[in-house]
Structure formats: C-alpha cells, structure tokens
Image 1 (cartoon, helix red, strand yellow):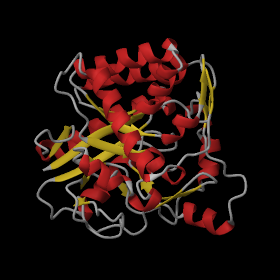
Image 2: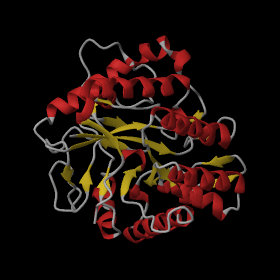
Image 3: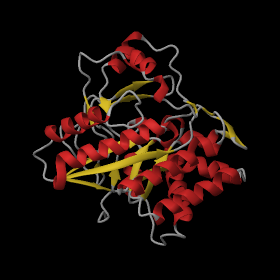
Image 4: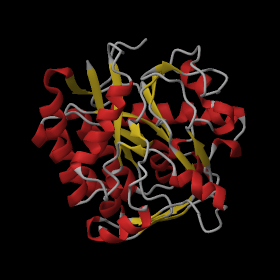
Length: 340
C-alpha cells in the first residue's frame, strides 16, 4: 500500500512580507483548505509555531487570532496540524504586519538547553491553540525549518523522541541546498523508503530511535532538463510573490552552485515550472525504487505562501493522475495515529 501524505509548511515568507499577513499566509491557506475539501483529501499543515509565539509575546493579535482560528478550523475539517520549527523567530523583532528577521536560522545558534526549551515551548503552544478543538491533541510529526534536521549534529532527534514525536518528514533523497544561512545535504541517506532516524544524528545510516522518517519523494534531474533559471523566466506568469526568502545566495562558490544544480527534484507544488505529469513521474520514481516495501509512506510538500492559482491547479491535477494510475493501491492520508 502506498500512503501519500500531502504536507504544507504553514509559515510566513521568512525574509519579508510584501503586503500583509492575510495575503502572505491566511488567504492562500484558506484556498488550500477549500481545494482539499473539494477533491476530498486530507492535508497536513506543519505549523511554524514559534512565529505565533513571538507575535503573541508582542501582543500582535492581527497575526495570532487568525493563526489560531485557521489551525482550529483545519482540525475541525478533519485535517492534521503538526510541528514545524524555525528557531530564528525567538531572536526576531516583530511588529504589526512586519518583522525584522534574525539570521540565527539553524540550531547551531542555540545551546542544548535552549533547544529543549524551544521544543517544550513549541509543543505547549500548539497544544494550547488546538486543545479547544481536540482536548487530547499533541503533535506526533515534525519537519525541521529549512529541512535542517542535520543541524547541530542532529541534536533535535533525541529531543523529539523524548517528547513523544513519532515521525519526521524533513528529508528528500538526493536534495542539496546551500546559502549563507544553512547547508542541507541529503545525497547520502539509507536506501529505504522509510527508516528509523539515528539518535547520533548520522543521517547516512538507519538508526535506533523510535522516530520513523517519512521522506518527501524526490527524483534525480535528467541531463535533458532546461536550466532552472530559463524555466523560471519562461513560466514567470505562474509565480506568486508574497514576500522574500531569508536565505542569501549572492556569493555562493561555484562548487556549491554545481551541487545545487545536481540536486534532486522534490515532489513539490511550490515549483511553478512543474506540470502534473512531472509530479507523477517523481512519485512513480519513488514508488518503483521502494516497491518491495509492503507499506510505503511518502510525502508531497508545499507552502501556502508560495501557492497561487497555478499551484492549486497543479495539486488538483496531480491528485487526479495519481488516483487514476494507482487506484486502490494509493491511500492519501495523514500520519498514522497508532504511534506510541
């Protein structure tokens, strides 16, 4: 059985919001929820809860109230909310509809004690937001901010286990990214569809934790693909601009540029150069690669902040294609509920 989980990182543009919080996050998420209801699929929002906490601390209700309402509505509609951490928010200055991002983007900027406090705080805040809808709510899945699960030697992995998180969905086979703020390198991962993470943070090996990895599906690039920069110009009319990234890439060494050029393609509806058939090809590749596994759990990723009309149509068409091809073999679902 193929278990496909449609996941979306519920977060603001981390560099700057172009217009308003409503435009940047709440309105596109509302459109996503409407589409999910229309096509009859559950989705998972990985909520950037520290952004909420920071605005709450500064008493900025223009962000906290719609944040609470939308996540509560997500549960009421039968969808799922899970844990997503961008720790730099703890050092970021926020105001009404604006913020000045701190560049402490990865876990290296925090001590072991601070990391545990951040995780405790994040779980507490998510529970407080969602317990009015589900008194027994607790997050069971995690996605690292910026995919930085390797950060600080994987220090978050034993903490996640300690606080009852059963699943991670932060990696994609063959993905590589580099900026002034972080480096993500998933070129060497266990050759399995799902595996347990290592407590020592060595992601090249299957581990001994109780946390199962549910990777984002990915496929190596072909030699015949058009260069990304060219495709982005060709299809610029499909893009939306609700803000800017936090990452600086103005002085990247050539070696890093080559590594990123070779990076695998994620199963993502953020990429406005993709077609539904290309997304299906990525899923097909992942399924073929791990076809011997009885139950295969795999994720699609998106970000409401990056999704406009094209991305929503891309998601709808991809779901239709996947259902048509795999039929009863495919189950579009959320994270398993029987985790300890």
